[in-house]
Length: 233
Image 1 (tube, one colour):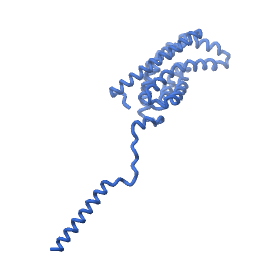
Image 2 (spheres, rainbow, N blue to C red):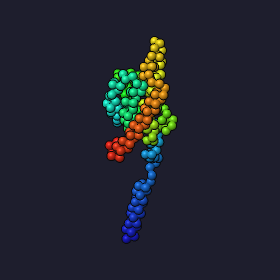
Image 3 (cartoon, helix red, strand yellow):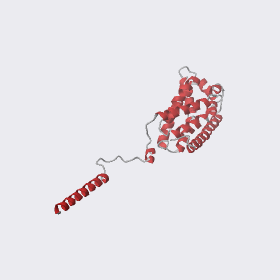
């Protein structure tokens, strides 16, 4: 009888030890340190992030929209008026690039769009292919001032300066490219379209204002598309 009782006590003690051991296994943290999860906000603080295929595809689609709506360029190239090309393309080349930047908030997004655009512009009007240089300059300014495209107004800033920078750049192009033949004066005169300095300044300001309006419109469109779930991150 005592042996039976002792045997039962041993079995109960063993069961209790097994139960405690199983509980400890369930509650004991793993030996390896788990990798801390990176909050979404912390991810956005990183300026340089890898590009995905969907990012490049989206930028290519936005570039196609820019080019289709900017198909009026061949009609404007031969008009002898300073800044006529920029005035005709100001909205298209600010609205769509800003939408692209609002979606793909990564350094180089504007430069990629410019490379896609240049492939076509070089056949329409070769000097406009220098827009890639403008995009590179804008990218550097955005990184220095805003540390990237996380801020919506950084996208507006980029869209506002993107096309207007072609004005001084193309002037330098015409002034220096034709120095070999000695026709730089005639080339720059043709580029200026006989405009006096006051008109040049006025048209330049008008181009900047037009691109700023287009950039703000692009930001508003992108925000509405995000609210509607069309432009997802």
